[in-house]
Amino acid sequence: MEKKLSDFILGEEGVVCKVGGEGRIRRRLFDMGITPSATIVMKKLAPLGDPMEVTVRGYELTLRKTEAEYVIMTVKD
Image (cartoon, rainbow, N blue to C red):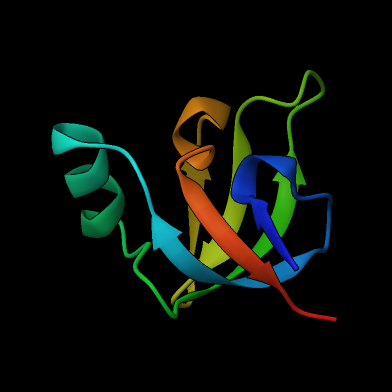
């Protein structure tokens, strides 16, 4: 099942299918290690849902919800 990273709940894990966006935002996500086949786990969520903290490639990364909307994930069961 595919869903956006911005729609993940705490503890949910998945694999990046594709990264959308154009130009700077897409490049920034790739530079942060969010590339196809990377595993991401949702670790923390701010009280109002923005920002969110995820684990990717062994490190903690904080993302805005607007950035996470560009990341399409395959959810692990």
